[in-house]
Amino acid sequence: MIAKPEFQPSDPNFETRCRDSFNRQPAMHLIGATISRLEPGFCEVELIRRHEVTQQHGFVHGGMVGMIADGAAGYAAYSLFPADATVLTVEYKLNLLAPADADRLLARAQVTKFGRTLTICHMDVIAVTAEREIACATGLATMMCLLGRPDAPRK
Amino acid sequence: MIAKPEFQPSDPNFETRCRDSFNRQPAMHLIGATISRLEPGFCEVELIRRHEVTQQHGFVHGGMVGMIADGAAGYAAYSLFPADATVLTVEYKLNLLAPADADRLLARAQVTKFGRTLTICHMDVIAVTAEREIACATGLATMMCLLGRPDAPRK
Amino acid sequence: MIAKPEFQPSDPNFETRCRDSFNRQPAMHLIGATISRLEPGFCEVELIRRHEVTQQHGFVHGGMVGMIADGAAGYAAYSLFPADATVLTVEYKLNLLAPADADRLLARAQVTKFGRTLTICHMDVIAVTAEREIACATGLATMMCLLGRPDAPRK
Amino acid sequence: MIAKPEFQPSDPNFETRCRDSFNRQPAMHLIGATISRLEPGFCEVELIRRHEVTQQHGFVHGGMVGMIADGAAGYAAYSLFPADATVLTVEYKLNLLAPADADRLLARAQVTKFGRTLTICHMDVIAVTAEREIACATGLATMMCLLGRPDAPRK
Image (tube, rainbow over all chains, first blue to last red; front, side):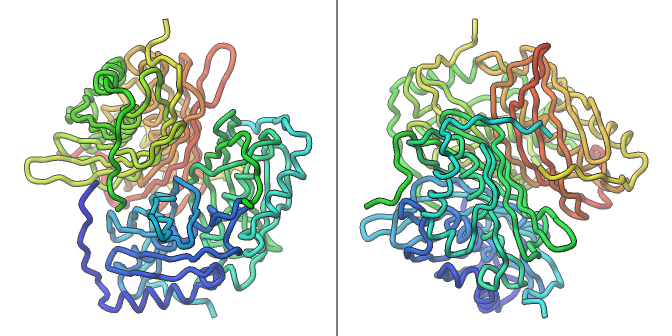
């Protein structure tokens, strides 16, 4: 309901930095999630339905819905962080609105409030079929900026 | 802080029913999660760390932590449901307390309030190593009982 | 981010019903909150800052912010309920974004998903001064419809 | 479910500091809430039912329940903070479990995870009558420590 804020990323190289970080996450590879859109303060993560990510009714598992929502929120926030920082999920809350009954899910996260330490994001997960788009989840996440911590695997 | 409630399951066959349902979830197979303990109103889901479920720092991915927490809460609630019902996650909220830096995670969910329609669960995720157990996440979930809906894949 | 849904209230008398119910809440009188706008699926609650509702820094107390947000969500949902129902807050989650440093707060709640049993609302609390409007809180609430229960004081 | 942690307050004068801060909150005076118990990492806030804090069914208003829960969490966290800091609610989530139908409510908050910047608390609100105690709400809160900020009214 509040107008979408306009953000100026402090790191001009934010897109490569976010995509590289996402690609270093084996868990996102495992489930088959990809970043489908990235803007300063906004990230969309796509998940294609295949048997391996479903639950007992054949819909995409709610845990997978949460996972791509959290992922999108993390990179929406991370896109605004300085180059030498990493991102940490403090907490998130998700309401599941409808079964994720679609061939394709899009988790969209938008930064609502950007702060030096904490950044708050709204998240929506959309189930996309040929005929329609329906909201299957909505939520809020609090992300933390850790300065001077490399966003890379431990050696 | 409130004493753990004692629950009498309405379905004496609750354990088989829960384990069968869990096993019908391809997503839990994909990530390698299993039910390690099940009691009326309580469920523990175990996840062994392997490369495929980690994030960029080598810890278990926060989305995986959320997924097993939500799964544990679902079956903690489902254990108390009548035999002809299915379970739906209405919403959950998770605080990530520490990196999931351990070879083994245990997501424990306990029903706090059982209701005919809505059941509320507390969730804790514990990172277990040879030396110690630390809480890596804590949360709350609202589960819904859908009567007369089979808990099985659509044909 | 999802387009605002259009709702058709099942009770044409929804406005009177909501305002009467709100007026039966002594707690809202105590803090000085009023319904400033009401539409099907939408409610705005206004709170004027006076000394009695502040915290130690002179801002409106966060608990008051939560109270008007929850109140707005309750009536946003209740506006869509049948005439013979009452509304119950199942749960809510609120992120406080900025100090409520303004002479006037507006809590706006919009139904995102209307259901027979559960209705989900987004909530925003805006701090309004002569110069600007800033978001001081944002949240999500799950409301429950109790059919056949009068929305009136017990005798 | 996790064992209650033992905390050593960094400020030996924590009790006076917390009670003084609470007493500087006009909003808590307005609703009639008081601190009934305070320990390092734990706070209990009491609210006596009187007409002014009820909703349309004569129970204590859910917003009041949230307000004392948030207040308890704030002082549970603040009890562990250094002497020259103030406390800020980042976010909280509350599940309302039963109507607050009692003459006396006790909101109990326990720090689960203490951190230099963020502190996480569990909250329970208990409805106390002569015959019984029932849980009427449970929740989680994230509190922030602001160092070097006086916890006092602006001049």
